[in-house]
Length: 180
Ligand SMILES: [Zn+2]
Image 1 (cartoon, rainbow, N blue to C red):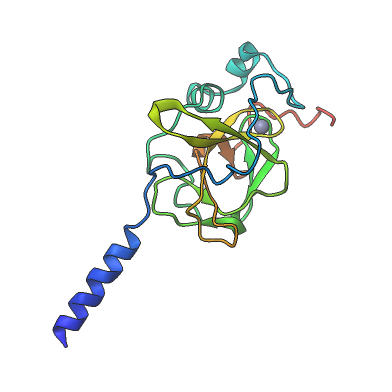
Image 2: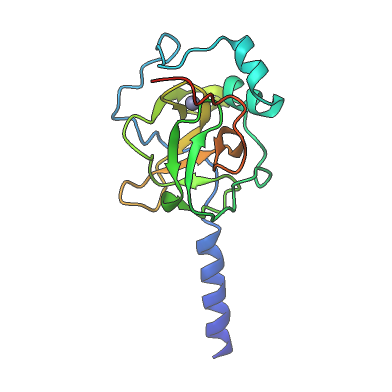
């Protein structure tokens, strides 16, 4: 009997450690991942303007495609209901209903709030082939999307906490007066 318990425990441990940030084949390989370098995003700002509006950490992640260290961001373990906005422009990108615990150390979502809210781009940095995720409104870097998610689409949007805002801070860059 005791042996069965040990075997079960071992099995569970192997199961929960199955998640990691190892890049897999692009989930969006079927999409045409055109370069966003030439893309015009609805919200245009100069890098100088972004630098003034964002904190140094936000600027590094959002505008220089930086990655915060795992388990250090403010939202990796957050379960508070709400909408996650782009920390650069305020656009609603993800919903808490689609957030799941990936044990990866970054906030993870199985879905985007709505179609077109994020743009995907092929990322070959650091000798890996990954799919980068950008804000569809301002083009800021959010994180990456992998094809090992739990939802029906099998996607895991692995997003930096620095790139999103759950409405618990005053977005320095979001000017409500800006009309669509
Ligand atoms: Zn944005």
